[in-house]
Every structure is written in structure tokens, then in C-alpha cells.
Image (cartoon, rainbow, N blue to C red):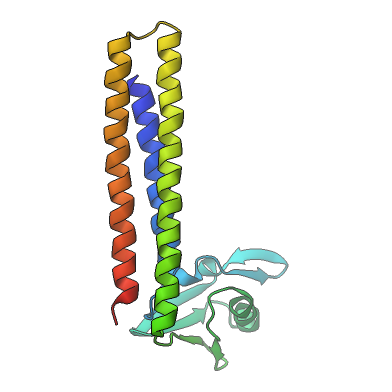
Length: 184
């Protein structure tokens, strides 16, 4: 049964990590290099993540400067940023690309908060689905007479405690991101 708990914790941890990674790509009015994580550049016919082609610096709170290692790829990088869904127009000066993050409007902040809440709820549903699968595993152990009914009850209680812990973690991560979005 410990194997079921370990597997469940591992899956729930992956779910939480995925949520945090997802939230890191949401821009909150200040520059964050993580918004570029999903940008893929066509590098001589090979789709390449932008992070493997550039150095990114943040000279100001709302400015990212992208310095390609190969200057000939500047146009392709600019095109990839334009095609991505980050919603910021790159400024190319021939040497570097600058991304200036505008201040978020109140309306946009509220829209982002709703989106963050929705993603948080989806993560909670995923955690609960993991719990359901683990409960099925415990019931199967009982059915196969590998554990007693008392062990089953104890296992289900421990599983619920693990689930409650991860639900609380998801809520904390979601609340933290919502507060970040709403702060000016």
C-alpha cells in the first residue's frame, strides 16, 4: 500500500509543478523571461526553443532584452515572438530584440485572475482524479485479499489526507499568482 501512496504523491507533485510552470508563463505586468519558454524558432529548418538560441536579460522591471548568439537569426527570432501568443510586439534594433511589457489594465487583470482561478480549479480536479485512481488501487488490493478491511479504511483516510495537502498547495499557488496579478 505504501507503493500506492508514493505513486500518488509523485503524480500529485507533477500536477503541482505543471501548474506552477503554467503560471510562470502568464505575464503580470512586469518582465519575466519565462514568457518565452513556449516560443519555438525555425532555426535553419529545425524547430528550436528560443532559450537555446539567446541570452535574455532584464535591465528594467518591464523590459526584456534578447541577445541572440547568432546575429543572423535575429529576424527568425522576431518572427517567432510575433507568431507566439505572448501579446507583445518585439522591437528589433539590428543587434538585440527588446520586449517592453505594458502596464496591465484593470480589466485585463480581472480577466487574468479568472483564467488563473480556472487553471487552479483544473489542477484540483486533476489531483482529485489521481486520488480516485489510488482509491481504486486500494479497493483492488482489498478485493484480491492482500489487505484487510481496516487497512483499506486506514489507507483511504491517509489518501484523503495526502489529497487535502495537495489541494491546499494548489490553492496557495493559485492565490499567490492572483495576488501577483492584482498588485500594481
